[in-house]
Image 1 (cartoon, helix red, strand yellow):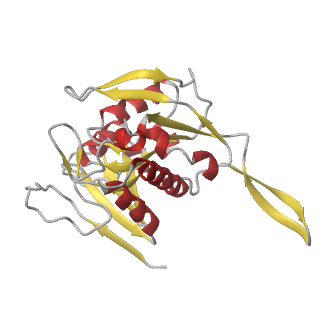
Image 2: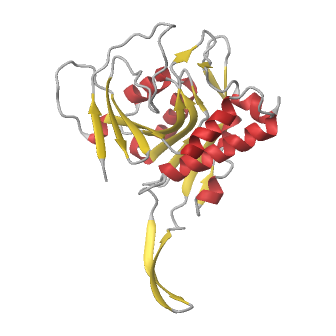
Image 3: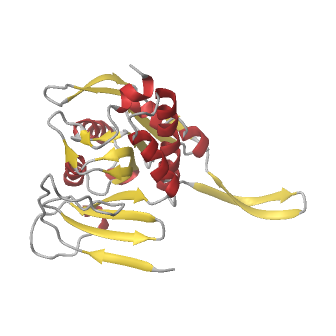
Length: 275
């Protein structure tokens, strides 16, 4: 196995005529320090919520990890989602397939298991199952999050789904909660997927994670699943939720004045449901 690790410190401005960076992970987090690590077929960025210029070792608790898995199927479904000609049913299916792949990647070495022995047709075999006594909490942020989380139960043997409805004011870009089905308290050690297709300004995802924090869930118990992310949102998450992990299909460099990611996917909710 070959390990390629690149260390760099960035303080970059990106004018409109800057060429796209030919990389799966776009290094656009300023003024934070960013380290990139590419191992096998997963791309990982480590965002440090730490702004001093002095070099000091930071514990894992002070880092937010951003993964952009370099799987060709993930690239395929992101491309389908980007195409403005993709019709609504195919767009929704592409969102569901992308969510399935991202959750598969995010669940590596994270799910609780139980070991034992079973009798196969030809002998005794040592086996390992996902522990059904500890279901993963899946929290889609409505409405577009429903499409991205559609296949959660097919990839995860034991889940509980809690719906969280949030809308963004198009003038202020601030989120409003219109539906909250979260429990008053999560069980100790709960593992939680928060599914939000578009991490644009970061207001919605920050509000959702604060609700989880109020219910006893630590940053390291949460993994965020997103189709498309932007540097402003990831920077907010890095500053406010050290230890968090984000799995996203793509990172795009720009937000427009209406808070939409450019080039992005368009309005994921409208394109998923045609309304």
